[in-house]
Length: 156
Length: 251
Image 1 (cartoon, rainbow over the protein chains, first blue to last red):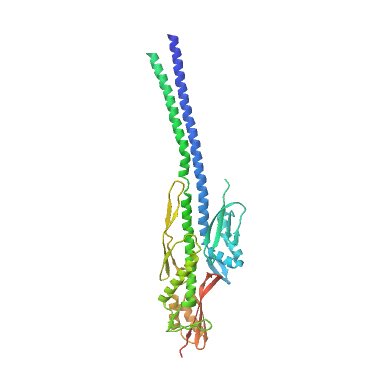
Image 2: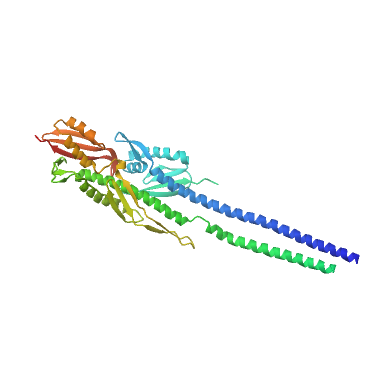
């Protein structure tokens, strides 16, 4: 009788112990898996938002750049004009191409540190080595000019 | 009795484990199954952002077109429609201003608006997104009221559209143009009379602000060559707007 009770107690204790261990193991496993999956999702969201913000940034920067006032000498007279006008001028008078390049670098280099490309067809204002993601806009003229601006994405 | 309790405890423990496994398994399955959809649904609304970009670019293009069209129209007025009435132009392009041929701001505004509309449409015709504008003029303010544009921004299973009105107004006096200048210039000529061209020039310069004035006396008239202090971009580059007229000296 005494022997039988002892065996039963050992079995019972082992069953409860094993059950407790399994539950603890499942809880730990679930926490680890959840953390892993949640981490994956948040990483995905972050990547997307960076991609979109660089495109948005390029458009905002391009329009702001086109409306930036600069002082240049026209017909031997200093005058303040906006970059969009300087681009128009450079497309009809190529002697202003160099002025356009210099002024563009003055505006954009402090912000993008050379990691951008800029074209106003047929002018190549600034080009870079790399694979920039481009955006564009038109500026009105007798023949509208397509201005293309690209930012080189930072390597992750 | 004791045996019974032990058996119940064992059954309870087994069921507890089984229920826990099922509950965790179901939760895990649900979590994995929806995680893909969750990622999709909170992803960036690309087409909506694209539609917003189109609005920004259109507004920029339209405002720039309006600025250029205003310059073109003002240049047209200065060259051809500054004065109205019984006007005669000589071989050198000087319009003879007199009490029968003089600037009238109301007529200038009407002609300016007609020319502005023509020029604005010629710039906008090249743009992809088409919209029609109701254009009005109030002193030096041009109001461009646009019809609303709706762009499709549907993304996968989510239906969306983006509606905007690219309306705006521009004040031409902000870039040194004023439609009342022509009447003011005529008034100045009436207050600055005489055969001495340099005296007339000095007198006119005090009264007329936006223009650089040159006066020459050529019997029997004073020839006036006015150019805007500001240069503007036209098709072939930057140049000032010119206004040429003459006034006969009464003896």
